[in-house]
Amino acid sequence: MIPAPHVNASPITVDQLTSRTFTFRAEPRGEEISDRFIFQKNGFVAGYSHPNESFWRLNGEAVEIVDKLGKATCVMLPVNDGTGRLMFSGNFLNPNGDYARTEILHTLEENTSDLHTHIQSFDLFDTLVARRCNNPLEVFRSVEAKCGIAGFATRRHAVEMAMFGRRTYGLDDIYAALIAEATLTEAQAESTRLLELEEEWDMLFPIQEVVARVDAHDIIISDMYLPYAFVSRILKEKCGLDNKLYLSNYGKHHRVIWPSILAEHTIRTHFGDNIHADIVGAAAAGINPTLVSISKWDRTEEILHSAGLAPYAHALRETRLKTFHRDPAVHNVLKAQAAVNLPLMVLGAFWALHCAERFGADTILAASRDCNLWHHMLASTHFARAGMPPVSYFQVSRTLCYDKSTEYEAYLRGRLGARTLLIDVVGTGNSLTHLIDRLELQDRLRPCILVTDPTVSPDETKYDTLVRRDFFQYRVFLEGLNASLDGSAVAAHAGNGSVTITTQPNEFDVDMHQAIIASRAVFEQFMTSLDRFTPPREKPALAMLQAAAEALIELLPAHAPKLQTIHREQLSNLARGSLRNVAS
Image 1 (cartoon, rainbow, N blue to C red):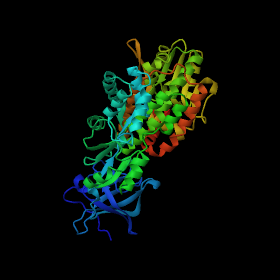
Image 2: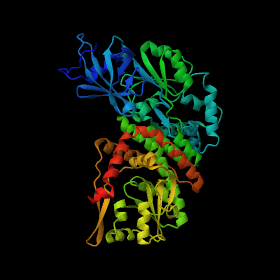
Image 3: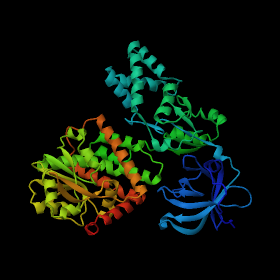
Image 4: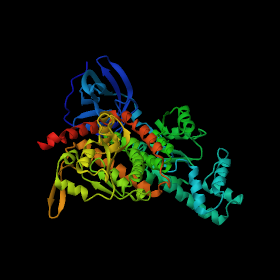
């Protein structure tokens, strides 16, 4: 029988939790789930793996066990069993039952294991840092283009492969061999070696989701020919880590490094991306391995590749890998941004170019709120180089579309070009076509809605769309991913020779507010990456864009269960923004 939880005189501390190993049980059956449960200082649960118990946090006297969605699956209070050991218990909150309290009692009781004193080890390249180019050989090709030495990339790679596995070598040895075979002169070798290091440095960026798992006493083990000082700098300046680094040519690859490592450290888990060196090799040394495959192309990036938009796929991969948030609920929103929303905006930008060409548009108006992010992409210098007409942010709402306001009519007409597209992210098309029909602007103003609802639509000849999907399965989530802290436009007023738009403030909760701010930061990071390349000379064919958008939108349902915050908040704001509620 488990004693009743009690409130300690002294609060539980992080140090108390992280300096012990616990046995995890389910009562009343007495089922032992794990005797290796560890609280890591970085908020992760270690020694045990299950989506329901992925993270932890302190909340006053309680220890909350948190799932992959960022929701508490158990709120544990301290228990005094008379032994002086740390012990906690709380009822399991079932994720499959809307986190309802169950009769299952989860307990954590400290045991005598020293597993919590064991450390983790991490590979570096493609585990903690990634290259922007994805393929390391691209570094050599870039160096060749900059140094102007024909054939450098091929010879640079061939010389290293002739050494690999046969001898210990470093970057200086590679360049000495290039001099010996007359590919480079000594002067060329000196400058090209420095250029290669610069190119490597510029290509590298942190994989933040894995960096976040590194604790202060963990170690880094890398098979790499680059100089120790340079690799150490990567670890410190790119990853923000000051952990001990072990560097060899192929110590992991040939499994010769593990005995000396294990003589100095007791390793609980090794994280790495190479099946042979990091997984099979670590397991053979008696270490539990964890495969890190996050740096490889994901489905979203493959879709952009298939649409002929490889540079955007590279930029999106970098954004995805550099994105992490300590709050799992916010992190899930950011992952959906990178997997669906950002690439859909890119496809939508090229689709908008097709729409503008077909309509002969010289101006684009981007609808407020849902386009609060997308309009920055459409109006960017990058897409201006692709031929995008000038883009302005335009205050619009259902209320204003149906309100017969002369002030709002003046506001709209004052922003029209000779022929104008009115762009929106999601909608039925009803409000926009009603406004255009009422003002008889069909020849001057064309609605273009990225995602429309096929179940509630006006005459489809009156607007353009890229994707049609059901509102509650797709549109609500897209609106949530594009949520804005801007208020909803509700009225137009004239004064001092100009028209101003009154907005109704949003009422997002703290979690949604945090997710919106973090989403904007991810968007801005992605936009910065577009400055590194020029758009394609020929925009992708419309059919190709539609196929890619269809494939992308089908990824959204897999993210939907992890987006409960934005789903709840968006539905709430839809209710507050209805015509009836605004009128009242």
